[in-house]
Length: 545
Image (cartoon, rainbow, N blue to C red; front, side, top):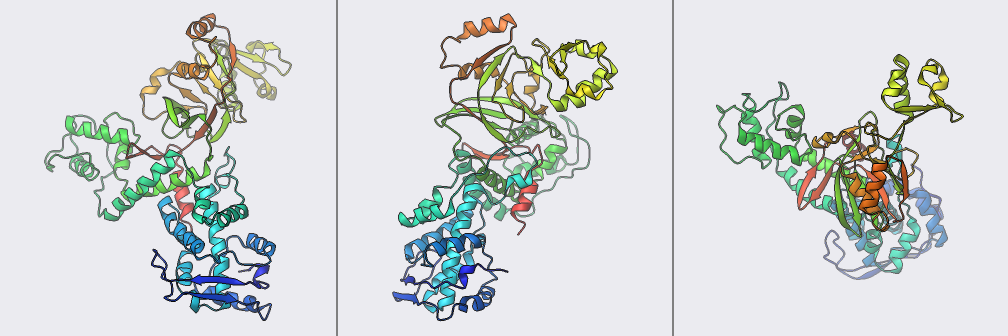
C-alpha cells in the first residue's frame, strides 16, 4: 500500500482539545488538555511508522490519497480538525450514514471511535494519522452522498445522466468556515421526496428483517392456480399472506380451494407489488410471495443508491417517468399536477435513463422508423413481401430524399439500410395523435398509441424504447397552457385536419427518465417489478467489499 508524499513531510502543529463529553459514540478523557505535535524531529518518522500504525488499527486504506496530499501542501501541513466540535460532528455524520443506507465502516468509523476517545494517549504519529483519516472520511462521506458509491456509467452500456459534480476541498472549507460540518454534508444529500421516503422505509424494513424468522416458503413447482381450483399449496399461500399482513382468517390445511376471499387478498398483494392484478397465482406471484423482508431491505438499499445518482435539481417544472413502475408524473413547484400510466421499452429494447428538456409537440405525427426497428423488423418483412410497405402506410426515401416505390427497391442491397422509412399520419400510426419531443441522442419521446387497451395491463414493458402515455392529449394540453391560442377548439381543428402540425413549447419543462423499484407512498412501502433485472447486480456491487 502506497501512502502520499505528505506523510513524510507532515510537520504539523496539531491541536486536539480533549474534553469530557458524553455525546453518543465517543468516550473522551476526563481532563481537558491540549495535545500538541511539535515539528517532527525526523522527516521520515511517519513514513517509517505509518504502516505499523495502520496495521495495528485494521490496515487503513485512504480513498483520497492524492487529494489529501494536495490539500495539506496548500495549507503548509497545518491541521484541519483542531476544533473538537467539528471532529465530533463528523463522527456523528458518519454514524448516521447508516440511516441513508451507507456503511459507516467505509468512512473509518471503528478507527475514529477508538482514536477520538483516547487522544491524550496517542503519540505524535498516531495523532497525525487521525488528522488525515478524518479528512479522508469527510471526502468519502460527502462524495458518496453527492453521487453514490458506484459509478453507473461503469455498470451500464447506456447511461444518459451526468454525475453530480462536487468540489470536495471547497465543501470542506465551507464546513470549517461555517463551523458546521453536518451542514456541509447535508448540502450534498439528496432532497427528493422519494429519497426521503426510502429512508423511512429502510428503518422499518431493518426492523422487519431483524424479527423475521423462518418465513413460509411456497413451492414454485406446479401450474398457475386460478379461481375455484384446488391446490395443495393454498394453505401455505394463506400463511405467507398472513405473515405479510394480507390474510386474517383462520387457516385449515384441508381447505385447499382457491376461493373468492383468498382471490381478493391475492389481488391486493399483486397490486402493491407491481404484479399483474389478475388474481391468478402464477410463477411471478409465488416468487414475489417468497421474497423475504431481507430481500426487500436489499431492494430499498439499491434504490437509495440510485437516487444518489440522479440529478439533485429536477427543475421547477418537470415530467418524471418511473420506467419500472410504468408511471409518469407532471410536477410543478413540488406539486404533482397530473399522473399518467405509461408503457416502456421491452427488456430487449430498454427505455434508457436520461434527462432532457421539452422542445415541441407534434399533432398528427408521422413516424420515422428507428434504426433498430428498421433493420430488425421492417426490412426483413418488406424483403419477403414489398406490399407490406403499402399496407403499413409507409413511405421510403433514398439518401437524396426521393420517394421510392417498394417494388423497385433491391431489398437484398446494403443500400436499403441507408433509406429513410416513414409511416404517415393516420389511425394505424403507432404514435397515435400526438408526440412530445425533447431532442436526445436516443431518439426517445412521449407519444399516444392506438392500442389503448394495453394500459389495462399491470406489466407494460411493451414498446420499442419510447414511452407511450395514457391520456397524452391532456398532458400536451397542460404543456401548452401558457399559450391561449391553442385552446380546445384549436387543437380539435388541428387533429381533424389530419395535417402534421408542430407547436413549440414555451414553458421550461424538464423530462427525467429514471428507474426505481421501491418507494414510500403515504407511509406505505411500495415495490415494482424489476423489469430490467437490475437490482441484484447493484446490490452485489454495493456489498462487494
